[in-house]
Image (cartoon, rainbow, N blue to C red):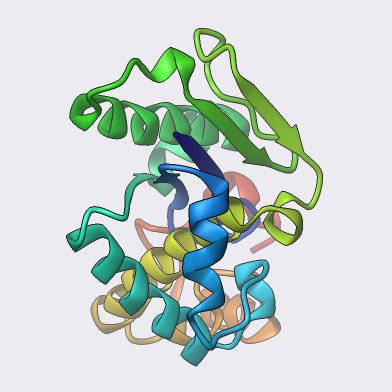
Length: 201
């Protein structure tokens, strides 16, 4: 068993941070399955929205067939402001692993965990490896990246309907010029990260 982990939403000024854990039986079996899919696989930010959504359809089908499993956890703006982004990511990461562990017949302590960038799993997971640009080097991390990105983008699109004046469906919470202009005009919402926003706004 191998689990890949990646996060999406570290830098936005609005919305949650999202961590996905993606589990497969083996990397070799995953590679065989990926070769059958006529879609590029890399860091989710370097894929088009169409490609990410197409992969997500595939991954849901694989999950239904028992070929993989994945879990997603969010930490929202209020908590990010209260405890900081790094602790929030650690909290979401631990929750995602906990969700998989609750369904897993094997002890998670013996499962290899591959993490992107500077991410680390809780210390009790002894077989873990952090990989710089892991979402480009390991398919299992790239798929975790896609799951997290699609889930978070869909949430921001739903929030755009609740807060129609901010363009969340377009910038998904990042601090674009249009986003800052909307804040200046309409003020902050409950989903804005106040600690991320320029103090003069």
